[in-house]
Image (cartoon, rainbow, N blue to C red; front, top):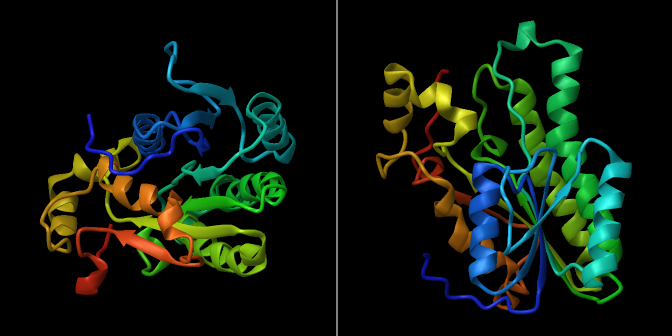
Length: 251
C-alpha cells in the first residue's frame, strides 16, 4: 500500500497501457487515491478487476480510441484525467530500421498519444477542466543508439505536450509530461539481463539503481492534482539524476 497524499475521490481517470508495468502502477495509485479508474490497452491483464474497468483499445486506431472514450462518457459522463502510458520500443541499428518497424513505433507512441489526448480533450472542454499527462522518456533529451524510432517518438511527445498546452490553456486543461529514466520493466528486460549493459547504465545514474514504475507515482499524481493547476507544457524527469549528470551511453 502506497502512502498516497492526494485525494481524487469522484474524479474519472483513464490510463492507456494500463495493463503494462507503468500503467498498472499508476492505475493502482489512482484507485488508492479514490478515483474512478479505467484502463485501456490491446490486451487485458487476465483477471477480474473489481476496482477498475478494462476497455480494449488500440491506440493506433482513431476509431478504436473514439469507441473507448465514448464508452467511458456513456458510463461516467466525463473524464477528468488521462495518462497515456502505452509504448512500444524496437531496438536495432538505424541503418537496419525498416518502414514497418518505424510506423509501428511512431503510430503506437506518438500518433496514439495525440489521438487519445485529442478525443479526451473534446470531452474535457465541456467541463472547462482536465489534466492530460503523457509518459515520455529521458530520450526526449538525449540520443541513444539503436533506438531511433523510439527516441524520435518520445521527443515528439514532448513537443506535442507543449503545443497542446498552449492551445488548451484557456479551456482549463493542463498538458504535461513525465519523463522516466531507465526503468526495470519487461520493455528493458534485455538490458538488465546483460551484466555489461546494466553496469554501463548504472554508471550514469547518480542514485546507482534503475527506476521502478512506482517511482513515477508521486510526480504523476501531483500533475493530476488541483494543486498543479498553474503548471502546463512542462516535463518532469524521473531519472535518478541521469540528465543532471549529462550522461549518455552505447547500447
